[in-house]
Image (cartoon, rainbow, N blue to C red; front, side):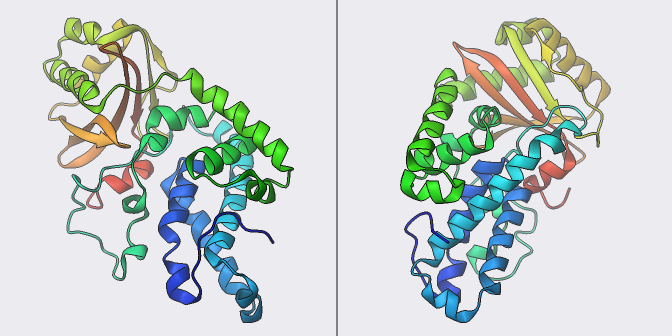
Length: 312
């Protein structure tokens, strides 16, 4: 079996130290913290099942693990579309908190070294995990996504990506180019400061139930997508149009007295978190252009909100 990447390290300590990198690769490939963790655990299980003699033959265990993790993710992506067809309502990637500002109540409940901490804490927050970016990744074929993430985000050469995909380096290069064209359609994000200002105004207008102010902050062609996973009540189809979204947001506020809205970093960019009686109910991500909100992604599925607070 070939290997992707150049990670080195032998023995238990070296192998355990690769977990952070593997979680980062897997989350970008799958858009799910839970699935990323499962994929990485599966890769480690396969390593430990190898005979000791075979382990010693592998010059770069970290690279071997990256290749295996990527192949596992490729298989999961292939079956994901069928699973998401059965999903109730829209499927959105799992939102990530910023570990520097979010306090897991009581701290981690896992003992041991940093590499055994909550997987969400190990994901580097950059433009490649922004919700807008992850949603674009969902439009790619599994092979396009793997080729693009491994090459454009993690800088692995096509010769090594070819071993993951079972294709020629030239074919992998074409896959990444196709994926890149999809990403180029998405506008470059505004600065964090610019987005924070708009998100703060949305929060204030939402709290005061000011429909006119909300309409002014929303692009007339804005779209709101919510993910409840069939576990909580929410819209099953996207809400289109700034006016309709504003009316929907105010209706939510009317039905949920005591709802507290907080400004938080969501996948590395300014967003909002709604909680009630200390329990996280919704995590909302925004895409902003020319001072107005163009997209809102609201994740309400409790299973996808676990990284936001163990106490919930």
